[in-house]
Image (cartoon, rainbow, N blue to C red; front, side, top):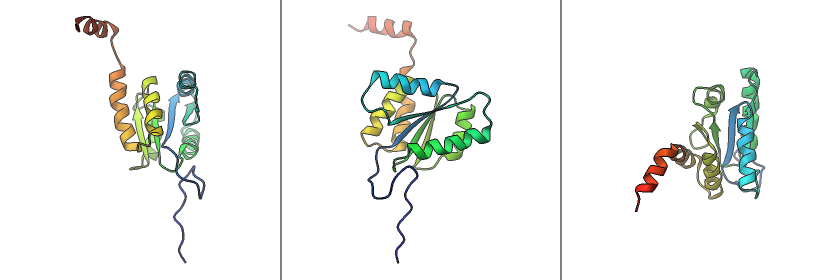
Amino acid sequence: MTVPPPVPAGRQAGRPAGPVGILVVSHGPLAAALKETVAVLQPEETSDVMALSLAWDEAPEKASSRLEKAIAAADRGRGVVLMTDMFGGTPSNLALAFLEKDRVEIVSGVNLPMVVKARAMARDGKEPREIAHALVEKGRRAIQAASEALETERRVP
């Protein structure tokens, strides 16, 4: 008798895997605010971005349990990219326990352009590792000093 492989968390048996899940995790309301902002900018289906806002005084054990449940809910069978607010902060530190090669990736320093990019890449069928690496670059490029950007723009003929 052959035993079928286990169904990944967040996926129902017999249903094809969906896109990679995107989960924004933060101190306070930042994650929810980023999700809400993406929903306003791109109002089509918004269930592909999930948010977990941790309370400032939340016990680590409770926060870890909530994070585990949120990851399971975000996983549609192809893994999850966790986007945290700050490397070394509680959300990032808790997320590290769930890092799993080719299934769960973590990117710290989340900003709005990164969330928009993550959503587009997940919809395009990209894998968690590819999404994570692209988000690091997107996050870096999205941070600009306006004076430098304008000077560069003025110099270009």
